[in-house]
Image 1 (cartoon, rainbow, N blue to C red):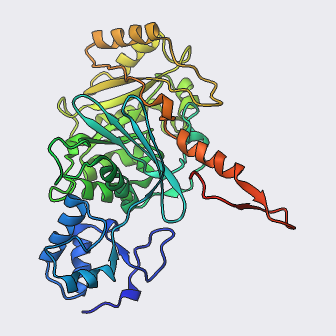
Image 2 (cartoon, rainbow, N blue to C red):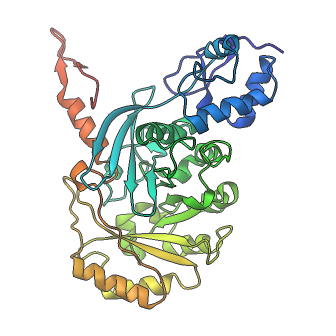
Image 3 (cartoon, helix red, strand yellow):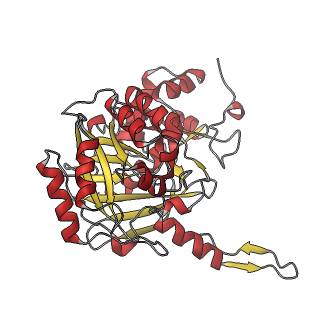
Length: 390
C-alpha cells in the first residue's frame, strides 16, 4: 500500500508533522516497513542501513548502489539526522567535548576520551537531569526532556563524523567503547536508550559490541533488571557513599531506594559474572567519603558482587562546595580496596581545560545565552539576539 508522505511523522521535538522522516529515529524493522509502504523490496532497507551506519553518509546522493530516481524518491521522504555541534572544545590531553544542539534548540553534551588501548565516547540520554546529585554540575540543571532514540544515536554519528570513526574508514577506529555517563539518568529514559542501543550494536552498521558499552545509573532500582534483560550491556552504578546518611545528600535518589535495596538489585542483574562485573563509581570528596573506614565499609558492602570500583577524583566546577580528595588520601583508599581483591583504578582527570566535567559546557552556554539577551525597544522584554552557545 502506498503511504502519502504527509501522513508520516517521526515525532521528534521540533520536527514538523509531514516533514521527511529521520532514518535515525527508525529501527531496522521500522525502516523496512516504511520502504515496503513505498513498494520497495526488503533488501533496500539493508542497503540504506549500510550507507547510514557503516559508511556515515548524511544524504542520499552518495548512495551509488541505488539508482538515481530511487535516490531522489527517498530524499523526498526521508532525511538522515545529525545534531548540530554548537560548540566543540579540544583539550591538550586529546579529550574532545561537544555541545550538540537538537532540532528544538535543546542542548546536551558528548565527550570523547582517547586512551592508549581504547577510545571512549560518553553520551547523554536527557537534556538536563531529573536528579539533583549535589556534587554533579548537571544536577544543578532542570530536566528539559528525554532525548529520543535518534538523538542518542545522533551523538555517535556526529562524533564519528568529527573523528573519522566510521566502520568503513581507516583501520583502528577511534571510537571503541561507549558509556552512557553524560547528562541525564538513562534508566528514566530506558525505552529510548534501549532502542538507540539496538541501532548502535547492530553488526551491519556501527557495530559496537554490547561488551564495550556501559550504562551508568544513580540507582533507579525498578528499571535495573529490565535494563540488563533488554540491553545486555554492562552496568555501572554511581554509588559515591557507603552509608545512607551520606548518600542521601550526595545522591538524593537514595532516599527512595537506599543502599541495601540498590545492592540487592545489583546482585540480581541479569548476566552478572566475573566476566561481566558491575562497575561502582565513587567520586573522591575531601573529608566526605574518602577515609580508610569508608574504604573498608565499601569492601563489606560489595561482598558477593562481581565488581570493580572506579575511583574518580572530583572535577571541580564553579560554585561547588566540594573539594577533591588529596592524592595520598585517594591512594590509601585504593590500596585498601585492592588488598580486598577488587580492582580499583583511579580515573585520571581528563579535559579540565575544556570544562569536561558533565554539565559544565551546557551551563556555560546557558550563561552566555542569558548575557546575550537585550530588551526589545519599547517593551522591556528580553529576546535572543544571538543563538545560544554559538
